[in-house]
Structure formats: structure tokens, C-alpha cells
Image (cartoon, helix red, strand yellow):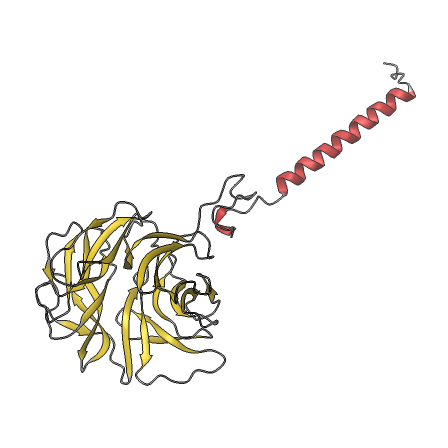
Length: 348
């Protein structure tokens, strides 16, 4: 067969077409080999900020929020904020907020006719419902891991004694857990729901952390902390149930200079056989609450401007301190932000 007779212009067009085809093939291969956009887990966007990449053109879900109490001129309201300080919102009048384990509801305290009572509400501040009544103190609510009960401290059965009680969320089924001539307060549920850690001054009038069985049959508590010269209070379990965080302060406060120093909290295993004081440049620090992943702590501390207490976060070793609620000049009296409660992880 004789060779094809192709004109010079025709050969040029074919060559140009082949070059374009080769370029397209190389570009396609490059796209296939290029790394994909990072997933949401690797993004750190501000809450409700639309970004390109992992969340597409939609807004990424906000980080788990932190509840706290803002007190101005002795009037307390429960607020919510995201860890980066955005999304600050007032929810309801009250104090001592505690998340339900699924993060949909909040238990808290409000004074009614001169007596502190336990209330619940939805996480957005709606559906406020009173759960305890009567001429007695009801404080420090803590939601059980299963979500069906609330532990609290109160004078329900004894006007001269502050004890730990457990009730159903609707206020029924009241069980007295402690019965001691002492101030028992700040209960915290262990992850298995069988024990409560709590603060008590039953040890020679000095606050220490104890634990007790929740069935209410023995009323016998076991000391978890008993370090001579120190007080321990405000226990909080980590989400995975392996750690216990609490205020840990010397009876005679030391003078704190520059650099890292014990800030006023300690973290231990659940039986407190090992204890590590948290050292940080932030001082003082107290009323800690674990982040959902258990890697950070929200706590309250005095701000550097001397305006009052604010909410901060930091790593478990005291590093990476970040202020959550802003320092603002008081407009109508001194304002403080305390008692943070970080939203728990989503149920598995």
C-alpha cells in the first residue's frame, strides 16, 4: 500500500492535537495524585464560619460549647460560649450549670422565695422547669451517666446538715446518700454510675474529696484525698472515666512569682493513688471541667487586667492557656465569669 500523502498543514494540525492530548493526560494524572482537601477534623474554623475544603461551601459545625455563670452586682445568669470566645449567649437566670450526658439539657440552681432549687432546661435556654420544692437548700446538681437521675447537695431531710442526695430527673424517688454532721457538697458521678465523688469538710473541718456508693444503703464514704496541709474540692471525672480533676490548694497559699507554678488544681487517677499538681503561668485556677476529648480543661481564673474572674482553657499540663470570656470594663459593677462546664462528648 503506498504511503499516505499528507500535506504540511495537515501534519501540523495532527501534531498540535497530539500535544494537547498529552497535556490533558498529564493534568488529569496530577489532579488524581494531588492530596484531597483536609477533613473537618483537621480544620480549625471559627464557629459558623463558611470555609472551602473540608466543609465545602457550608458552615462547619461549631466546637462543643462551654457553659459558665456570669455574675454582675450579685445577679447570676448562665451563659454559653464557644472555646474561641465567640457565640456568647445568655440562657437563663441561675448558677451551677450541669450538662445532661447527651448534651441536650442543663440542670442548674435558681433561688425561689429565698431557697435554692434545682431546675432543668433545654440546652438553648428554653423549657425551664423547676424540679425541687420546699423550704430547703438544693444545690450542685450533677446528671447521672445514664441521664435518668440528678445528684445534688441539700438540707432536704436535715436543716442543720448539708448532705448528698439523688433523685429522678422529675424530682421523684429521693434517696439520701450521705448522713454525717458535716458539709457534703459538689457531687460528681463516676462513669459507671455506681459511685459519687464529692467535697466534704468531715475531716477535721478541712475540705477533702471523698467517694461513696450511690445505692444509699451504707452512708459510708471513703477519703480519696488526705494530703496534710492541703484542701481538695470540686471533683470532676474525665469523659473516659480514667482521671479525676479537683481543686488542690495549700492551707497557707504560697507566693507565686513568674514562670510556671502550681495553679490550684490537680489531676489524678480515679482512686487518687497518683496525683499531679497542674503547673501553669496562669494563677489561680479552679473549678475545672474536662473537654469532650479529655485533653484540655476549662477553668476559672482572675484575669490579668484585674477586672475579675474569667473562663480559660488549657492543656492538662498547664500549657496553651487561652482566655475564653473577654475582659471588659464593668459598666454597672464588677462582673465575674466562673464555674465553667464543657459540653460532654456525643454518646457513642
